[in-house]
Length: 204
Image 1: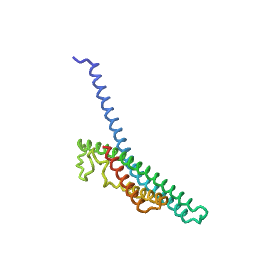
Image 2: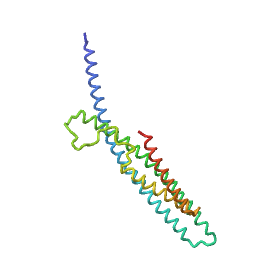
Image 3: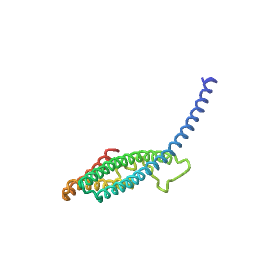
Image 4: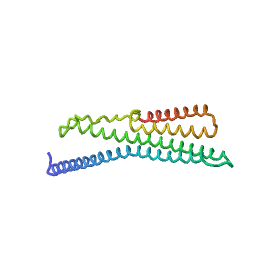
């Protein structure tokens, strides 16, 4: 037989559960909003980094062309050597930028999947009768990290070409052999494409 104390305990438990549920909903709401902000941040970050790298590459090319066009006659090899080093420096910076963009893509996908998971659960409960006729994503397994058609990977393809050009330029200024330089140029392109493919594929 339940006593008055037992009924009081049940009442307190229900009140506590309700407060916990309400608090959980508020936390989920805040979390959902923050995830959307984070998605926008990652997406913008990819393009901002790309724009910054393109500006830096333009400055690097300007310095190289000025060096090659200089009137240095005492040591004509010096401008070539410095230009080659600068070009290879541009390559190294570009490789780091490529890695950064790919990592940012991974962060974006993980947050986007969480958003899809929350939306999926909400639409299953369907408290407001929303049918999702617009077809918003609800699959927590998407987007795929290694979606090579994604616009977020376009900067990576651009960087691969620019990095390869800097490698070609830096190498050619030193060895002065077009045929060999082209072979290395193709090799560095294939290396970066392989890195991009394997790196994204290694993350589920």
